[in-house]
Image (cartoon, one colour):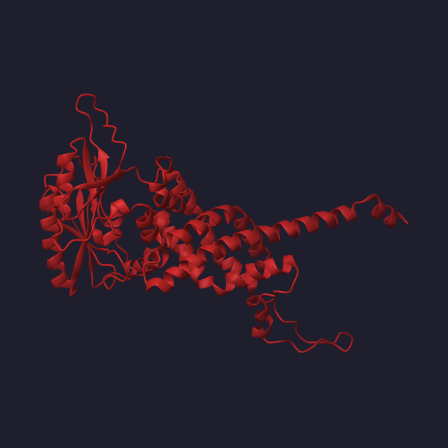
Length: 420
């Protein structure tokens, strides 16, 4: 009965997810090399390296707002984050009409040494041309390019994928060995568990097309089972971070994030009392204090962000507590009106749930273990696509066989033979 239930779940979850996994597998294969491909497509986003002093995130944000009074900055990403210095902006309200200005862009790329504007674009809008190709693939991978609706759809798909990891693993296990024998029905001695499980790990290359697809589907999923589970559950984090992932993680680990510890304001903050330049100074000071208190070393600033829904600035740095090859998730949160410290989150060594989450993010983003792991993740995306295609093929062949069998049993000749 357990096997039948697992087979039912695996079949229908697999069919339901096949298209989604095909999309995320193929896009993920390219996104493993996002920085390199983005730089190749948009070299104008990356200024010539200089030995001069880079401007701080706060200075850059203030220059953008001074240059574009109809826009407001929500975050400033520095060179250390994704290879390019970028301001994320949104429109202010037109005081005459009360409606937001029409900007036509939400990202501004900057020269980190001079603050000069290099380029503008609307993130991930493929109709704006090839400049948005990698960002569009990212939107497709994360939310089917459907924004919140797509994020929820792929979040539910990731949850089902996580469940399917366990049902599919169970189905690879061999059936129980037959016990005992009688004089009338002697049986050969039962083989060991490992001997009976061994065929599930192998692929017969000289077999029929159906058997080859079956072996690739079963053995491919089995050899990579642990990695597939990591990617399935980390996908739950990526899309259902503040619901399913948070509640599940808190059942097992100590886990803190801004959505668990910092309340939402009744009304989003439009204009904080603390400006960007002062926020940068406060962030640096608070981070230095926390580095001394927690015993870590600040390596480089990464991001300065304003969360208007909670009324806090977040100052990101890369520190000795980070495990990622690039970027950083060592964070301090402070009040955007009075500068008081609200929350400190370290990627490792502080809360067990945050440490686990940091590893999940780094593994999913191919941002750990250097180039070999990135190549592996790129190949894994193709394997996920292969598992989806072979799974559908196996279902189609079995369905076709069942249909032919039913037709033979119910054909006129079969009925006549039964009457005779």
